[in-house]
Amino acid sequence: MTKFIAVVGGVISGVGKGVTTASVGKILQEYGFSVTAVKIDPYMNYDAGTLRPTEHGEVWVTDDGGEIDQDLGNYERFIGINIPKKNNLTTGQIYKTIIDKERAGKYLGETVQFIPHVPNEIKRRLREASQGYDVCLIEVGGTIGDFENIAYLFAIKSLERELGKENITYMLVTYLPIPSHIEEMKTKPTQQAIRLLSENGILPDFIICRGHKPLDAIRKKKIEVMANIDKDYIISEPDIDTIYRIPLDLEKEKMGEKLLTQLHLKAKKKPDWNHWKNLVNGLTNATKEIKIAIVGKYVDVGDFTLADSYLSINQSLSHCSANLKVKINIEWIDSKIYEANPSKLKGLSAFNGIIIPGGFGTSGIEGKISAIKYARENNIPFLGLCYGLQLATVEFARNVCNLEGANTTEVDENTKYPIIDVLESQKKILEESKYGGTMRLGAYAATLKKNSQVLKLYTETKRIDKDEELLKNLKKKKDQDFRLGVLQKSQKTILERHRHRYEVNPKFIQQIEDKGLVFSGYHERTDGTKLMEFIELPKNKFHIGTQGHPEFKSNLEEPSPPFFGFIKAAME
Ligand code: GLN
Image (cartoon, rainbow, N blue to C red; front, top):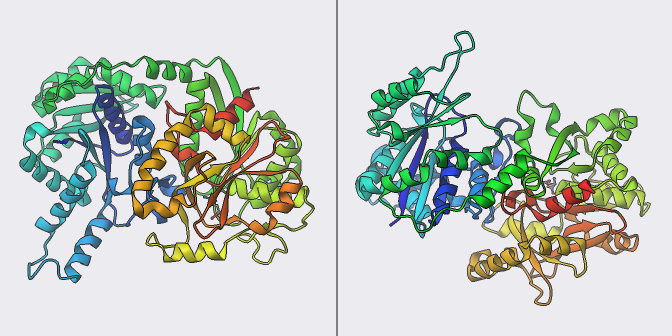
């Protein structure tokens, strides 16, 4: 039977509930359990696909094409499994299912009501997501006391009755502020959160105390009395240097053993943290230092945290840091500065590598293209992600193939040389698919060219073997066949996630290849259409672009091959 851990937040959101959930998952994995995680987002949007990245951070893409809140990314980065889109519950989805069912006459004369229909649908989804796993973590977004969380807490409490208390444990992640004028850690908001949670019939089994500093004995005692739980289950989780240290810190407080006790589980294996510890040390005790420029677009919008809209790229670079023991100093550069002031391009010579991340629309595009030209001409390692591949192809067409005015039709519909375009056949297939829209979303197979740099990268990081396993499983599931397309038996295939609409225009491929840019990977549709997945310029140290988003499959223990290769080249 699957055991559940419900993680809820108190006091304020944004204190690391997702990372705590992911860390707890990692700990249980070390004890030999198979773990999955569910994120509940109480908003009415159906998914995160239409949320503004500058407000909500980046949209996370799953293997099965879901556009999801980035917490699923946190789970994957710690647990290293591919989490499907059904593991993200939103209020929009719950209500839509119920209303659709009601319209289809599935409730046969019943009055459809908030209770029990909404919690029932929530429970159905939780059970479905947990199937086949030893442990399922459920993170409830927001904080206790939010109106929109009521149905979820009700559902979880009702799940407890059905499963028995020994099969579910509650974890409250709370925050202890230290107001600067008194310099004292306050427990009152935590006490209030405990009370609010109890109004839902839930008493926490664990209280994780986040704060700028560790929790001291006096305050632990206060919380112990208020929550009426043993102080051993009140766990201090202060701010630290890297999120990847959290599982190690929680283990110092014997989190694993305590969880097993609560859930009536026996360890399946003895945890071995050596590898993880090594990686964390690689992150914090680097022996080398490099500078990477990320030339992007979202830089000038409002007061958001910039790093959040490129969170996965940031994390992928951290994973390289950990494995290569190198400190990576990232500079976020707004590409528009190169349009206003081309002489600023020279500043790029101070960097060991340049990344052009994904993006949409027309703003800052010429600046990005100039930055790519600068990287190519000065042999500075370059990694282009999605739009980055597209613009690197445009740059090459313009400046090496002399196709003046070459462009993507996303920017110039009437360009004489539409190097990047929406392929008509592609548009039709996507519109007909049940996934809707015209975006290519989720994991697609890419056949890699023999002797290419890309093949070498995927081979030396052992991703080839992992993806071969994954491909076998995907083949079994008929409904995902269209993502595999035609597979070449004699060639190696990998899977990366996608989120884009435009493609390299097949009409120009030969002309571009003749001048030296290699299309080193492609996806072949069953109708014979080939979609370009990778470019590389063999004459440069590292000039690689990928149509996918490899940053969505990077984790601490398995850094993404294109990023890994890029950072290695940047270190040389
Ligand atoms: N705007 C481009 C497209 O839609 C690239 C998208 C991206 O970078 N994710 O094809």
